[in-house]
Amino acid sequence: MQQAQTATKPASAAADAGNAGNAGGPVAAVSAAVDSVLSRGLNVRHIRFMALGSAIGTGLFYGSASAIQKAGPAVLFAYMIGGAAVFMVMRALGEMAVRHPVSGSFGQYASRYLGPLAGFVTGWTYVFEMAIVAIADVTAFSIYMGFWFPGVERWVWVLAIIFFLAALNLLSVKVFGELEFWFSLIKVAAIIAMIAGGAAIIVFGFQTGGATVAPGLGNLVEHGGLFPNGFEGLLASFAVVMFAFGGVETLGITAGEAADPKKVIPKAVNTVPVRVLLFYVLTLGVLMSLFPWDEIGSNGSPFVQIFSSLGIPAAPHILNAVVITAALSAVNSDIFGAGRILFGLARQGHAPASFGKVSRHGVPWMTVVMMTGILLVGVVLNAVIPEDVFLLIASIATFATVWVWAMILASHVAMKREIARKGLPASEFPSPWWPAASVLTIAFMALVIVILGAFEDTRVALYVGAVWLGLLVLAYRLWVRGHGRARAELADETAQLPQVPAGR
Image 1: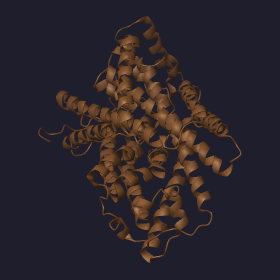
Image 2: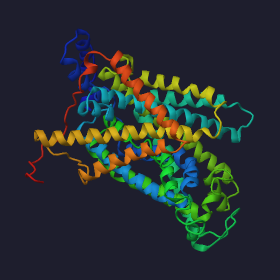
Image 3: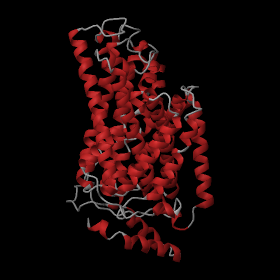
Image 4: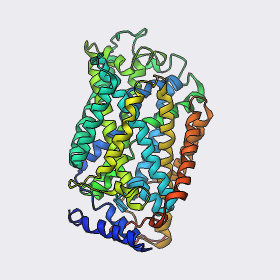
């Protein structure tokens, strides 16, 4: 807590140094202040559920039907492969977060180890990703509320939820953490209930409501086999599968506001990826055992089908409450994540200085205001976006997500090389199977980008992504000056461990 209490002075000192035009001082002073001006109010319970909940949202409750239609039962393999890749990204991010617990997270890491341009592009691409997903989520929220209140215009709900969540995010990071904990807990409880109930139906052989065939594991192979759409269908599903996992990187952003980063980050990283993988694989495995894969999503949400099959009369209302919670949780995390990255960008000279201002509660309030402004676009879009726009939004978000993940991995590789070259203390939370796993994961991320361009319904995401990256490079060349052109200077908080013998 001493670090938080002394925040104001370094921050102002950094500003003074920047105004004075000191070539070397601003970077060090500003970077040192990045993680100290924010309040450290997140404990392991908050962070663990935030990271878990951020990957359980629209991609699972809505997008899973699209992924199943593309790959059939083989989508289970897609989630396993994608989950393994995400785990390696999380371990790489976790190693860097424990070494450098800053709120700018992977934007700062890219700037430090790959250069300021890489940091600029990575940070703003993540903000772009969060903005797209958040707009989709507030739109989804308005549609969900329309189920209960069909007479109320959608834009009313959009406005209400935007200002409600913005107000909560302005209070304190602890309020945000508590809110996200309960949102995530509701989602996780609902998924566990669906897995348990569906498994009971399969084991005892009950006939499910609305099903044309008896439930059982045979449904995974009796309707065209495991790969009904071939290997091509499996590849096509990755556009939606990787979108579903997007958001887990928010965990790295929490490092700057974690009460004890060296304790909570490893615990969260080690438990969340496995849990997320199990939730996706088990839930969809049960779903496709209850219903033939080609019937899933054809008559509404796949999760309505599960609840209805359990014989619960109020199934649609229960599901609606769950998906509303999922949408609230997703928007809440989007505001938090994008805001903290913008805060880090401002401190690096990669965004307007106003985004680096902190309220008396230790919250970067201008970033919350900006995200609120972006979300107001949803007030207009929710009335004109057709239902089939989900795949387009998911594809664009997938491009941005995979790009950020690739930059996290590249930053990690550069950091590991620097550690070896300079003989720095070994990491306290090293990524496993180095370097083979990191190289394979980077190759997989490149494959996902290629897949987006290979299929016509997702190809536009590649065009949008290329234009976005081009605009960012242009913006960097035109507007970033001074210390924004220097690599970030991050304090290495690694404990001085015993020297590792050569060859280890």
